[in-house]
Image 1 (cartoon, rainbow, N blue to C red):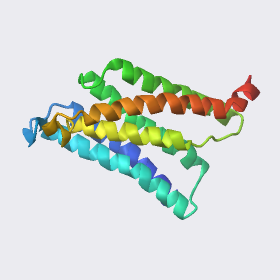
Image 2: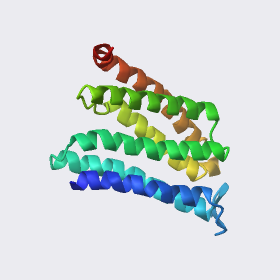
Image 3: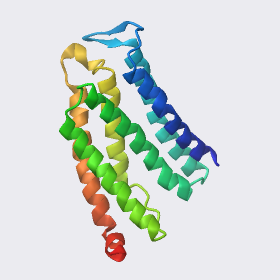
Image 4: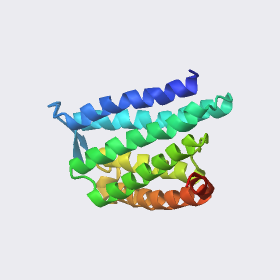
Amino acid sequence: MNIANQITVARVILIPIFLIFLLVPFDFGTMDLGAADVAVSQFIAAIIFIVASCTDWLDGYYARKYNLVTNFGKFFDPLADKLLVMSAFVSLTALDVIPAWMVIVILGREFAITGFRVVAAGDGLVLAASGTAKWKTTFQMLALAFLLLNNFPFGDHAFPFADILLWIAVIMTIISGAEYFYKNRHVLSQSM
């Protein structure tokens, strides 16, 4: 397994650690981040999430720079992103941070695209993520990072930066899903 794929696998391994710090009620106290206090365990979860998110860029960098692009990476990298993002969205919905309908839209797109990829894989095709899908993932990860940090440092100025990023992420999710199905409509028509 090459270094790019190892980084992708590491991202998946970080997910349960992130979830433990986010969801288990550790009593480590709180941190003053300006307008909003953040539980230390939530801050640790945010740092783990940010590190895991950065590995998405890092594995892609190594794969492109050293020509380490593999079918495993084309399939598992977006899956690792989905697992990380979906676990964060569902957790923040359970914590009443994000409206459920937004998460339903995001999860619906992710499940639909994953199902579509399975159909394509059955035909021997591996469909890589598009540029729009990569931007979608970037905005989702940025929104989640700022939501995990209670909109720090923008909370001091009552500027809803995290909410704006979340709305952009939802819009990009819809656009990238429609684009993905449109660009790969031939795969679906061949499979019917």
